Length: 310
Image (cartoon, rainbow, N blue to C red; front, side, top):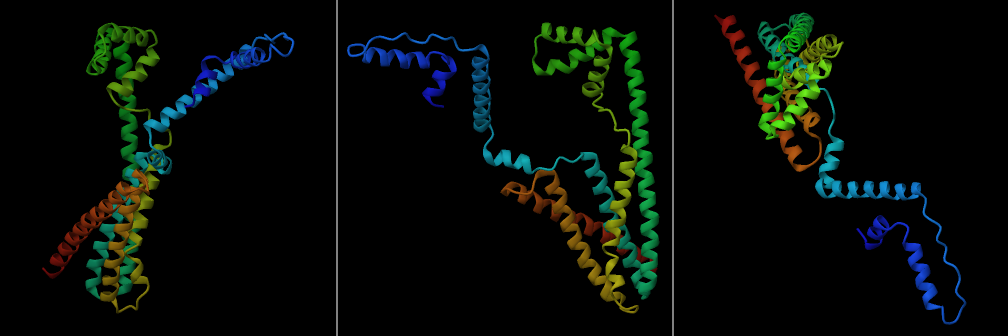
């Protein structure tokens, strides 16, 4: 920050006057004295200078606190609902392992057509089942939220002493004085709706659910399951009817690549795509997904083959 900026910030109206006085004193011996313009600076101009200065100060403080690399990482990070990411992970991870295990077990029968038909039937049934499970589970969470709201509303109306204690219990770990906490609690109790929202968010830690969350959750899980299960089934469409073993090995390779890509994308969406730390996190997430998915699929294939030979 320059000295000119500091001077303009604290003395916005004195700079032109100072220059005129300096010029007048320097030439008073040779030229007649003229009146100096003492027109006051408008208040709007002063407030505009002050607001611009505040904005500049805030920007410089942000530059000092947040390095350029960290700010650019925040801009590159995708802001996606965590619940949607969780539903997509659930559907894709199940789709990449369960249908693969079924097709691998059916491949021991030596008929590609049978593997394709059995795999498609399992995909459709599994996607519907997973979607209905997500829908019912979300509806149950919404019902639990409504019951908690009713119980909290009853508590506010019938037991104000207990709600005061809950507010104090929330703010006490932060080291606030009791007088400050009491003032906050009194302000919240003056508005029952704000107190209800405060207790739901900070005591029960339950944000209000979206109106269409159940449908979005069901569609995300079902689509993730179908897409994830269709990927290892693709090689069986591309080989002849008797080349089941070749399709199985290609399906294993496709599943490993799909698990690696899924783990990379999942981590990148949450953390960001650039930067050394984010790249290492993406690699760890991809390898973790490959290991977990391979272990689950291998265990399922082993059980199917053991039951078949038994």
